[in-house]
Length: 182
Image (cartoon, rainbow, N blue to C red; front, side, top):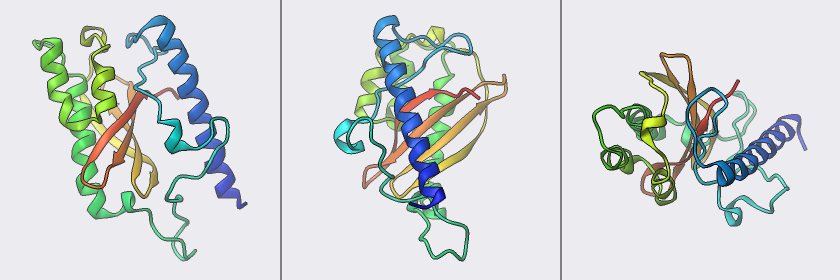
């Protein structure tokens, strides 16, 4: 196994452990979005699609190697895909903090076009009044696979969230989100 593949596998394992631990915290404490250490996690990935729990498998599309290495570029990293997923990231990123003068139902309705059904269900448990104030400052893609991209969304107030954006064959949707901790 190449060094890059081992790094990817270790990263995926770390993400799975964090998501499982955050899920356990959320189940006992409920969602919380105030303060820098607050969990803000949507449903973890379905185990039937991410392999055996505890074992790390590479994503369906490996991260691309530097040019000239011969590995294909993941679809999510192409200009065509980015033109599709970038508006989803920006729409969710802006809508997530647009809680003023909106009822909880209005807030969820604004986010609905950008999320999977599982995230839409999870958003019903979030109190938008507890979301930190923020003004969208931009985003940066962190990891790519053929049908998924991981993107950090930054806010001018100095905090960020990470979005896991999935292509379902027709559209890109946020399949999970979490507070970004550096």
